[in-house]
Image 1 (cartoon, rainbow, N blue to C red):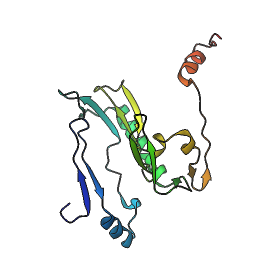
Image 2 (cartoon, rainbow, N blue to C red):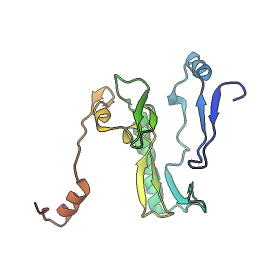
Image 3 (cartoon, one colour):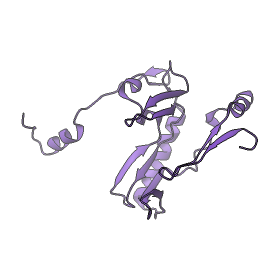
Image 4 (cartoon, helix red, strand yellow):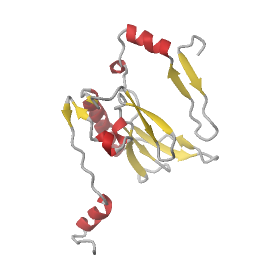
Length: 178
């Protein structure tokens, strides 16, 4: 901040998250040094996260004991992230950043270089959530997702309406009533 390489936006009482953002000066230094996001070492970043709420109902990360299952999840995520990192995943006609609006109308900028995936659990329980987060494709709409290429090849996106109820019917070997 002092050297005008980054800007600092302190988190609010609601989000609690503060943000550091590179200024054009720092971005130009990185460009001059030919630095890219590929130099970031993600190998020691935790990929299995557990959250709960504190006394003020704010979401906070909590410690947990590794189990065989957690170690297996972490190993699979590490291999998956290595595969993602070795692939070129992008939207060819799109710049590095994609502007979009969240459901609440707030603007959001997605970094198309954000491909690191992690798994997040809630309420200090392995039974609550376990959703995957991180990759830019998780947060963009269907129209944008349909434009994604992997290693120069277009991808196909299937949209299964009512997937979970239909899976339950399939498990029970029955059909929904019309």
